Length: 92
Ligand SMILES: [Zn+2]
Ligand SMILES: [Zn+2]
Image 1 (cartoon, rainbow, N blue to C red):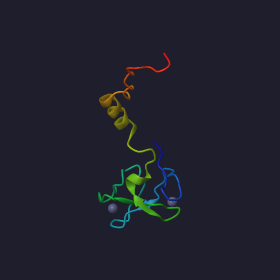
Image 2 (image 1 turned 60 degrees about the vertical axis):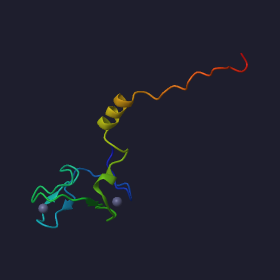
Image 3 (image 1 turned 135 degrees about the vertical axis):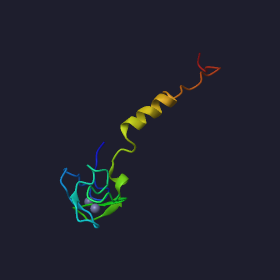
Image 4 (image 1 turned 90 degrees about the vertical axis):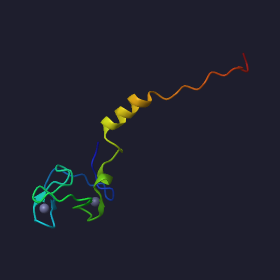
């Protein structure tokens, strides 16, 4: 799964680009799951260091839900149902 800015598509490079408004701690919000390692504050929204756009943290994750979730859904539902066989087959 890719992480990128929903606005400018900048991808985080693992650097501590975010700083906490409360305790001034610098951290990589994608490594800590949007939680400040200094004071434990959870940040619902993440600002892009490049274009300064604010977006919900989850909106940064490209490609929808995590892969394991998709896998579980597939196991639960199974493959797409096949169309029912036609009773009368024109042309046969
Ligand atoms: Zn951006
Ligand atoms: Zn903090």
